[in-house]
Image 1 (spheres, rainbow, N blue to C red):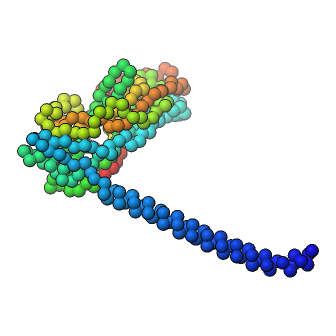
Image 2: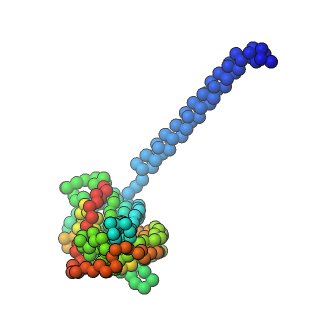
Image 3: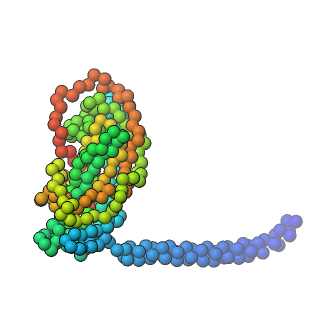
Length: 302
């Protein structure tokens, strides 16, 4: 038997070699097909992106309309707060929210931003951040994001595409000093629980109307554009639904030039939990500062 096996081993080597070559050919054909499909998909995406039309302005009898697309709540993350003895306990400061802003066709943008009778005198987006609970609906504040102005910069790429804001518990929104305390003020001991991005059931339209009847002076403070993230106070509890609305705005006149449209998603904070913070039982804040404008460093996308 050993002799027969010895006689067969060259044939085994040849057979294994053939099998290897066949498998190699099959793999090369498979890889070639896979790469062909991959490049077809990439090419298709590029063609789609190039052919996708941006919103355009429709003007008639001194009124204008533009249907917005692509605006959405992009993402969120909770902001932790390490507190107590040597920072061993973790509660929450708040939520950081990223919003994708819509872009507008270049010619329409030039018409919107032009002053006088030929244009509408718009210089950017007005973003309204609101909190809705079962018992109330509150506007937390307004943010402004400028458009590139005619004669200044041109092109769609100059439009700001990403806006960010933060909603904090009141104990972390009063001032920088309060947000850095090892023992949070107002007996804040809460940690965020279940959070999700959900469909906004209050969206009725995504069309902005530019008309005299839609104009309104905004009496509340509007936070001008900054490369920092503005922090709103969400109160002692952050449970609720957070909505984002957009309108066309003139910052100098503090005038909303169009209706508001609601973005189709909301941040839904459904639960929060009380955390035992060790070493803070008898802690008291000596002096309560007034609410300060508080910002965190963050780069806005373009």
